[in-house]
Image (tube, rainbow, N blue to C red; front, side, top):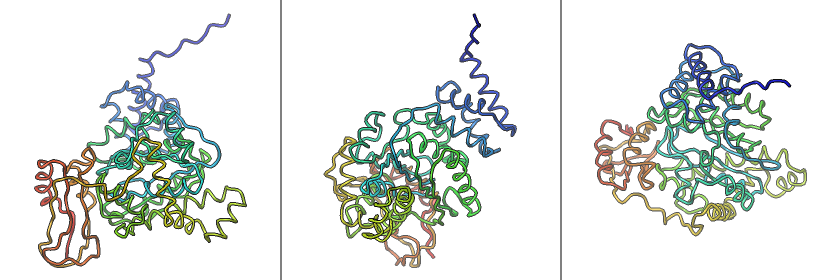
Length: 434
């Protein structure tokens, strides 16, 4: 009788992972077996924060080859849970780094109302004051079981949940935890994190929102274009139809920063309120239109002809779904199925009880908004833990300001947080007026 090969002990598996981290720190490339061992040991919480941080740091300093990026993504998916849906499965994701700009809460109900499946896995705050999951949590629970997510999507076509709620790419969430203190992610880590969760959620048609600018995660157009190529490489490896939208960003879309303030603006767009932020609406329609476009190209010809006849193109389709209230009704359905109160009005969402209005010391024009300082101040105010904490940008870039005008308003749920943020604002100014 043939003797069975002995299983590798947990101690040996850990040793393989440690040796792989050591190799990566000195710039050597890793095999799939080595990368899988690292992801597996991180997911099983056997490496601890220090060794996990060393691995994350190796990505900053040495980077990864395209093949290693494929191995990382594959291993991150394989060491966690996965969802399976039939047919076209849509998704949209921003690489982050821009405070505010909460387009997901508008895009998901538009695409779901159009009839496409869009199970959205979202992150919590990493390099900004809050993430999409922190914002959706204002409206409904986002930590759902696998069975609950499948049920919500079956009933509504969509969901907006925290990606780490039931073991999707668990190594990613542990790596994010050790990265948080620096408010920084390497480009390769951003890429792998996003693609692993898209794949684990069964997505096969994806739009990536890739902003660049002096104050966001990606600073240069050249870096954005390089990152786009890597997204396209991974998408091809995993048979995903992808469209990467590069655009320069100098300020948030919308005026609210922080869970309640951002969510209120997204709901205002869905409800088509007169006070809705039009820049957020335009950005959302652009993303939804692009996502519907790549989905429609793989849809039955009858639907393609119907969209062309009735709406002209997918951007007209997305606009109609938003303007006639269908998207808001779909969002109410999603909120209800996720366990929230669907009878929501944007004006029911009130920010923190302790406000402070920053007045302009001189007249002029707002020339710059510092996103990094926005993040620092918003976090001091209590975001994202305090849902009502945040900043409302009363004046954005290009706006005329008279001496004594309110430039921005700080909100907090605690007086101590507000005081600390006010004191820090003098050293980390948000708005430049010239």
